[in-house]
Length: 329
Ligand code: DAH
Image 1 (cartoon, rainbow, N blue to C red):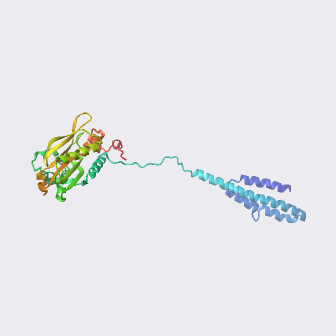
Image 2 (image 1 turned 120 degrees about the vertical axis):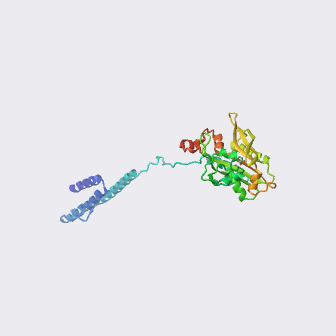
Image 3 (image 1 turned 90 degrees about the vertical axis):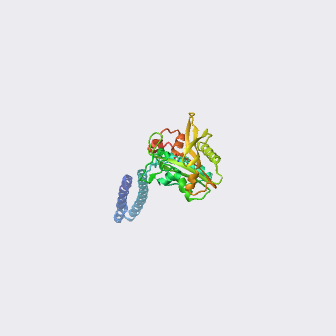
């Protein structure tokens, strides 16, 4: 009896100390296996009297049952702590901020082009992009600027060969589209143009938007109406502006439009006029039936005015500190 009592003490301490499933499994075999301690006890009972056998076997079976359930409970406990450790090890720190992608944004020049396009779309204009490599005919001759015409000098042209050049103005598209389409027509031509010039107000590449309307009875008052509305819309307020008589070989009459800046100075923002009858003749449009008006503006200048930018070169230096200031929704 005493021995058996001691056995339970040993079993409990051994099971309590088992700190892994492997050790517990070994204990299970040691006590409950075929050749385990309990079976040995039972086998040894054969040497005892009937009464003793009865008494001891009851006790042995009781301890055996207790051992089974103790091992079972210990196994649950061990599995729990194993799971707990695993969860702790595999823990994801969800408070850590994710790695962000750098979002790009629309370049201010493209943004201005989009704004201007959207205004003219509302008036039924279509937008067409043209070639940046042009020939002398479309860039100059057909626009009433024949060889030796003094107006050519102001264009500082990049010539590619005797005939081909990087276009100096989007007005080339007037010729191309009027040859291609039948009136009535309303177009804008946004795009890059090139002139060999570089300082705080000039870059060798810049952007223009050309406008062209060819219709019956179109006259200068229509042109004025469109330009007034366009400028008010673009600056989102009634800026003071004036039409100043000017000269362009391909329009007559011609004008330049100035706006009054905050510092009360006139600043030129675009050129415009009624398309010259000689130009219409060059594209086989009868100027007795149709008339046409046109305008051309510099996108960089418009953008600089809107955002108070003083050096045109900042647009193209790709300095992210500059570009990132322009976030449009
Ligand atoms: N092409 C001219 C330039 O680059 C701008 C211009 C003036 C365009 C008058 C026009 C216009 O369509 O009518 O200086």
